[in-house]
Image (cartoon, rainbow, N blue to C red; front, side, top):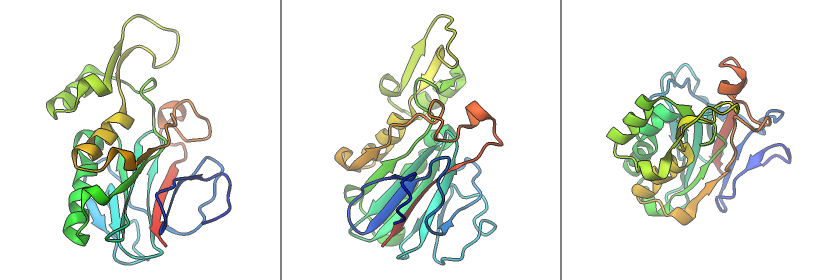
Amino acid sequence: MSNDSTLLQYDLGPGVEAFSTRRDSELPFPVVLSRQVHGVRVAVVNRPDMTREELEGYDALVTALPGVAVGVHTADCVPVLLYDPVCRAVAAIHSGWKGTVQRISQKVLFVLKQEFGSRPENIRAAIGPAIGPASFQVGEEVVQFFKEQNFPLDEIWTFQPGCSSVPMADGHHIDLFKANRWLLVEAGVPAACIREAGIDSYTDPDFFSARREGFSCGRTTSAIRLI
């Protein structure tokens, strides 16, 4: 791993490197990335030179190739990194609210099992910087989507009445950190094996935020590789 102190690094145990970049970080090594579309398609990376053009339309990447980093770009959406130390496989997931409500993390766990024999109870996970619950103000229709997909609203949803002068403070709020943690635990990943950065990209200027800066802002890269 690079000695770049600007990287937010995740301790998922020996045999793996995982990190998210900050605004001023440089990538310590090449990372395979896709062209994300807020969907739920999962690609198996079986060559180190796979291009974004080949990976058009995929929001999650999995690989068992040692030394090959897979990653996702985010600017408020949730990056989820998975590591199976038993079957030696990793995954990088772009899970915005649309991907979350469509259970993309659970779909990736299924692909890891299908492709590499992974079992959820062996998985270690990192949930990176993303828009926090206090900042993620949503419309009632978004809350309804989560309700229809049987998410535990008592855990992930809050409503703040009134008229506050603080941006994004009032109305409906969804906690995407808890929603993604719940998906992993529901699928069998041990809660104790899930690391959370706990960083709100909307309020922390070290990380890019499309809601704060506009869609054309830069992107945080979250990546993972076997070593």
